[in-house]
Each structure stands twice: as structure tokens, then as C-alpha cells.
Length: 174
Picture (tube, rainbow, N blue to C red):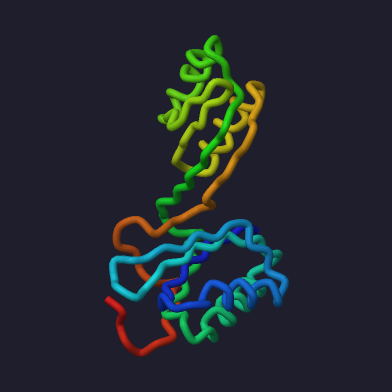
């Protein structure tokens, strides 16, 4: 089962390395990870997408993350109402005759051309992973030269009870 885990961490050198090393050592496969600063100085948010076989593994993952000294809060938000987005940059083979056709393909996805060269276009798309996948599928026949994806970043919608949240520190970070 695919799980989306968020962690609030102290923004210190080596935190990402320690956490990914711990996950790797315990044979958790990280499908994607995104990390960025939060609205609180010195605090970052991490979003992991992990594939695991059962709920016992999920509990083990949560406990292991909570043992990390720089981890302030861990949440499994998979079953909550969430907002999840991903960014992809796609370089597609193109010539002057195909540009209008490719523009017609990307417009319904609210994607945009961010670079044009003689033989290619770079397209930017953001949205749910399924939307990104669908656009990539439609662009494959044109010849994808390069592709990069950020992975999912997500958080819960509105105010939801913290049923699946574990705080390990006795202080509030907000």
C-alpha cells in the first residue's frame, strides 16, 4: 500500500541524509521525497511517498522517524482529505510544424511552454500525479528527450483532527 507521510523537522545539516539513511537501512522504499522550508524559521517540512506491505510496517516507520532527534512531528496523511501536487518539466522533440499541435495537447492540462529551441520545447506542468502521468502519456509520441519530476508535496485540507499525528516533543513549534 502506498502511504503519504509528512514530517516536520528542524532545518539542520544532515537531517535529510539521516532520515533517508534510516529508511534505507530498514528497507523502506521511498517512491518520492520533497523537502522545503516552512513558515517557521529553522523548521522544514518533508513529504515522503513510501510503498509498504502492511500496517505493521507503517507503525514501525512512524516509530523509527520519531526516534530521529531532529524530527518534531510525523503524520500519515494518506487517508485524510489532502491537497497533493507535483511539478514536472518535460523536454519534447519539436519543430515549427509540431509546436501548435503540442500546444493544443498541453492546454487542457494548464501546462505551459517555458523554453523553446530549434528542435525542442520544455513544458512545465503542476497538479495531481495522475494529471502529470496523463500529460506524459500524451506527449510520448512526440518524443520525450528528458523528464524530471519533483515528487509529491502535500498537506491536509482545512482543520482536521490529528488522529494520525504523533508529536514527540512536549513543545509546540507554532
